[in-house]
Image (tube, rainbow, N blue to C red):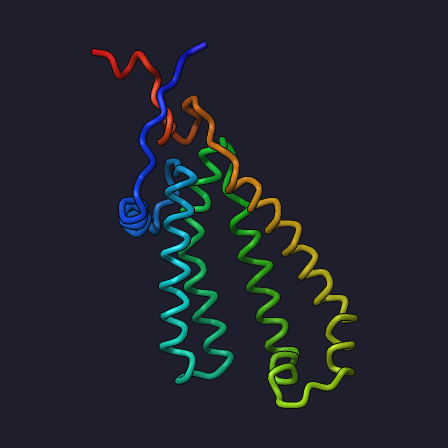
Length: 176
């Protein structure tokens, strides 16, 4: 059994800089700290950006823009899954469920009904009894919780098919 040395954790700025530099890369592995620091900065930037454009566009356009922006977090989630030795399908599934839910609520007219001044209890009852809404929320919940668990778990120490560990280095490779 090989001994491993843990590399220092990247700072907020290092992780954010690396995350944005690799924002479209699905190759390799990412550490937990790199993912969570990048996710924090990404979500703050996304929120500020949405505050800037939402007053000027319709609900439909805002939904399309926000779903498009949320696609940019998928590559680092995939690299995080790679760190566990897993394929990166869960981030895509989570996005598909989320986008499908958004578009269904939007085009089925629920968004307009729920954002009106006086929301009728009948509209809420109709929404929570809609089988498509139930399936989309249930699927989204299961996939998102599973993804969250994997994002929180430590990566594998040993190299895997996606590359060497970004956190652990074999002891003998540090000694010349």
